[in-house]
Image (cartoon, rainbow, N blue to C red):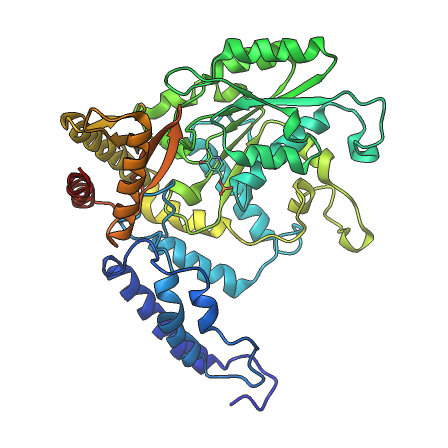
Length: 480
Ligand SMILES: *Cc1c(COP(=O)(O)O)cnc(C)c1O
């Protein structure tokens, strides 16, 4: 079969493609027979894969069979309804179909010309999504892979806005450059730190502002820190407010933070990677207070909008600054349309880009805005219900407010020291995750080990939350 130089024949593609679609449909409808968290040990999968690549080609059927034989018990099933760890990231049917087309077209959207439909669908989807989350028209959007990348571009824009010639001269060896400092709460995601270390700000250039008892940034502490840095001759340039922090999903007071940013002329970036999609729901509109004052904002549809990894949406009021930070012209990339179109390569570090907007097009059209909002709203409702069940148990304790769909709690049967409680909850979490039925994650709040349970899978039904809670209680009872 492979004594020619062609790709797979279209008959073979068709046959294997149909089989693969069957495999995917079976996988998703039988997903609950797998444990959500892979129970393998490090190196187990490595041992099953030959050390050297095959010299001669094989039938693709063999490769497909090896998905089951070699990989599946090494998969942690993010699509499993027992996956309630971190923040969910689930693949919906329309999202999976869109991925297939992305691969088939293989389009690279570096320039408008390299696929006009790519650039213009992305633009349309950013316009749709902007309206869905209630941002004003002056916000310009682009799709990146992850929130880490989006936030890095926000910090890069904030740095460019300073007009310190960093684009041309860099930051090292310059006596004329003040120390640049930026601010976020102590609960901000570490992608902010990564952005800072990538851009030469350094971890030492980030001030972690303390939070109140609801884990929200204290604006007075922010202003104090800014004043202190200015007094030392440093140059504050950027504040990151988090709407839906990773540990507890707390919401920083964006309006008050925006006042401070305006007063000191600082770039305001909002990290709403997880929670931002809830802005679609009328009852959740409160989270968007002050958003129209932000210079930039990130929301990840790949977290809570049923979009297969990866797809992060970045909005900014100042796309010209983003472009100023990153555009370069190379002769081989010049086109006749340059003066009338947006070439997406000008708005970030990457040249090539995947056709991700297809996923939004499929998902938004298939579910409709109301369908998406209803699903997300149901998750928030289920989380409130779970929270009320936990509150009714004497031996359990709620550890943080529940503004969205993530519940923070711990087992606390009384008369134990904090150290003992930490050890007990760590053991409880380990046993839950070894059960093969549920996967939860944890955080530490004020030194206390806290279990986090997130609801946000497209496959989450009430029964999954009930079963999870029964399991948690029964394992906890066994510990005591
Ligand atoms: C998940 C998360 C991130 C990182 O998201 P990636 O897309 O994986 O980079 C950043 N910030 C917050 C608040 C998050 O919840």
